[in-house]
Image (cartoon, rainbow, N blue to C red; front, side, top):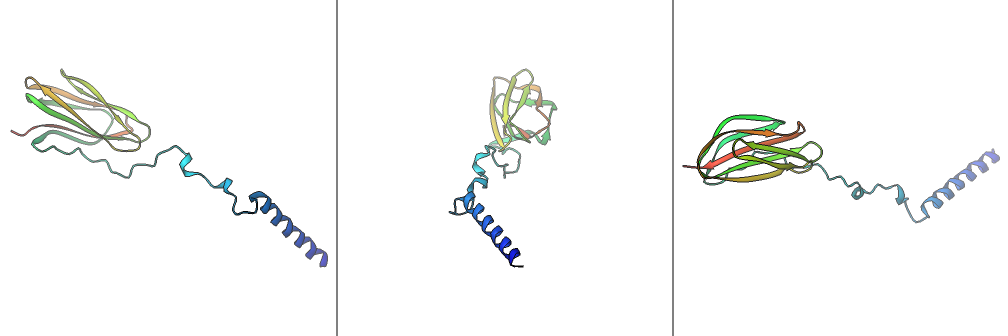
Length: 153
């Protein structure tokens, strides 16, 4: 029985010695503590995706969302002068482009982050009123809202 106690005491001393050797005897081994700042991955957004705000003095002629992917709209009419196309979007993962096409006027793209909601406002100034088709194109991983705003009459 004395031999057993001696063996147990020796193993306790051996384990204690190994622990002190691993951590230098100064405290816990910091080599095994993960560094949360080293991941390079931004935390997910805490902000929900919402519709763009309507500017004072303007009204919406088109409001759509939340949607994913491609959407073609029927004919919309933009008046002469200033109008706005606003898009709020976020990607489920990486940054992704969202393309907007205004038939006969042109196309433009906005970036949709994989972390924060992106808010984009694009002004259009027309010399005369136009009827046109409007299309939103992007990947299925992107959630978006779109708002087309014209001056109140």
